[in-house]
Length: 387
Image 1 (cartoon, rainbow, N blue to C red):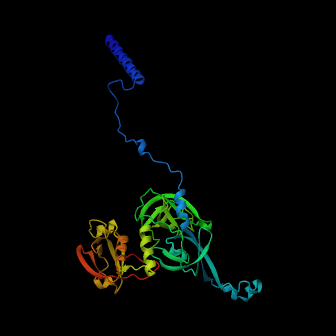
Image 2: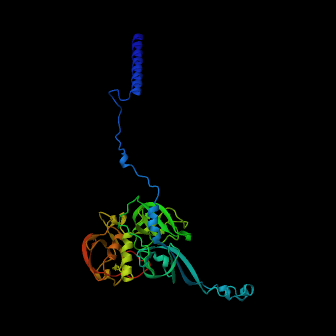
Image 3: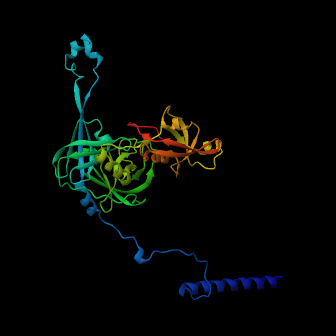
């Protein structure tokens, strides 16, 4: 038995010596041995495919800066008179210094704008010029011009101004829907009134909606710093071309938190051209109120998906009511185009011209049906419920 253990110990020692020798040989001459360990296949970038560092966006800024203006507005407001002003005891001690506190006072506001034509058309936000009775535009060269409102569209928060000046530096528009998530963008405006400022970021998301900012929402989300005063300013790409108009920020403090929203150039172009041509934007309307089809609602209606929109209300004697649409119907297509959610339904109906007879396809009690409705002009309103 002792002899067997001695042989076993000598065999193990020999194996250890051989393994150590092989390890030393592989360290001295890698690849010499006929066997290798498990390998992982990886994809490695070639020299020609390496990312090219960009050290400056000065050319893009220089191209677009002359087209971005500062907008100063003011309006008269009447402050409600304090009832203490009628108290003889109060006036005995304080006199009449507050007696005229209900006289009209001027309130100022500031924002930004973008020159879109050489003959004086300027694009900005509706909320920048809303109710203003005096509007002034400060050009980058320091000159100040009076401006008049050509028209506004509260439901997209866009407005067009006009100044009496020729040969202005109009901005170059990017192609519609050319932006991609991750593209570098520059935000140009007048934050907090400090003066023209350029901030850089990327496109964080596209097609943002259901934010409750405006009726028609399809925003570019960016982390480029946007602050109060940037409203109406330009969002440009890395080549200095306009891709959107800055309109809102998400903030609990009033300052930039890296979540800003801009109206994309596709909407800007369409609204701007209609305002310049007609003075306002005309949209279709059928008089319905809708809500999203949640998975729970879809299950209760025994629907295979959440595509479509639930009719929650119908305006009495409106186009939809006259066509026979009822609350509880599921609208799945407008004019042959599918409805994916309430936002898409709103856009599909708004795109139809008043007077057109459109076919609406819907589900009622799990039965598909088609109704014809005559489109009417959408009433003017600051905020409306979805179609």
